Amino acid sequence: MAFLELQELTKSFGKTRAVERISLGVERGEFLTLLGPSGCGKTTVLRLVAGFEQPDAGHILLDQEEITTRPANRRPMGMVFQSYALFPHMTAEQNVAFGLRLRRLPPALIRQRCEELLALVGLAERARSYPHQLSGGQQQRVALARALAVEPKVLLLDEPLSALDAAVRVTLREEIRRIQQQLGMTVIYVTHDQEEALAISGRIAVMARGRLEQLGTPEEIYRRPRTVFVAGFVGASTRLSARLERAVEGRCRLDGILLRVPPQPELSDGSAVLLVVRPELVTLCQLNEASGAAADGGGQRQGQENVLLGTVELRTFLGAVTRFRVRAAGGQLFTVDLPGLQAGTLVPGQRVRLSFPPEACLVLPLEETGS
Ligand code: ATP
Image (cartoon, rainbow, N blue to C red; front, side):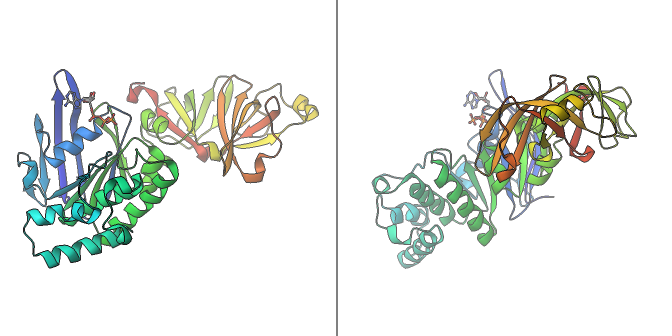
């Protein structure tokens, strides 16, 4: 049994099923992220764990003890919210000390704990500042120190970075991860930002419409999404409806073109599938008009697998990569990322050859996902 166990948790608000039979285990010292679009039930799961809400059905166990109906103030949890929720009339140090004072710890010990915690979150110099004298990122650091002060068994973070600007978000997420690892803290983190989830998590639980879609490491979620929803929500991709012609051999028909994909022994010939290809796994080669004309009329070139002809429609500079939208001859839209200088002089209107290896194709059965 995991350190924190959620078993078949269900919660409705009136007619809204916010959370539907969510089961998952969080290991001691693990950083688990609940990721999903707005309204998918992430915050409700967190509030059930914190004890701010009671489930309609299901159980919550912490360290093998049932805590499902235990009041929030008797659960060993710390929480950090999107809005820092600091006491405005208290200094950073007094905010951090608050929970320790309630516990009537000796003043010298409280002072020492506060000093340690403010140093841990990089705010040793600002102990006597009031919240209005601190930036948003600094206020969130105080909120984190305050939540850690009472030595919670589980730290719950509800979109703690979403009110901050982009650069601070990245710095602070790295800080949160460092502190979590340094303390061996068990964390449940809620976000709708897939990039943040991939960067910060040990494992990610992707949610949609109150349900758990997939649980896995960031690499598993990105490289092997198991549902159409996860493939679309996490990371950019090209998604193509195709038909699996020969499942065991790994042959797919995309309109008139036969593509090679990894073998799919568990699927049957003729199934409708979605092909998912990540943008960094597609290569683009500029065609001059002569070689374009020499190709086989716009489809697959003879003797080569998974090669299509197309036209660049859009070029977007994203910094480390340049993203291209390419319309293949059959009408399909591809998203392609080329790093650094490889983007060269490709511009909209240019004819290109698209290619991707069979192993770049992820094949998801369409019927099973109900899409
Ligand atoms: P967001 O990222 O927007 O906060 P979320 O994934 O955290 O979304 P929840 O806040 O858990 O989603 O909400 C899930 C569903 O339950 C939504 O449809 C929401 O409107 C509804 N809901 C949540 N709390 C309540 C409440 N107290 N009363 C009524 N409906 C609620």
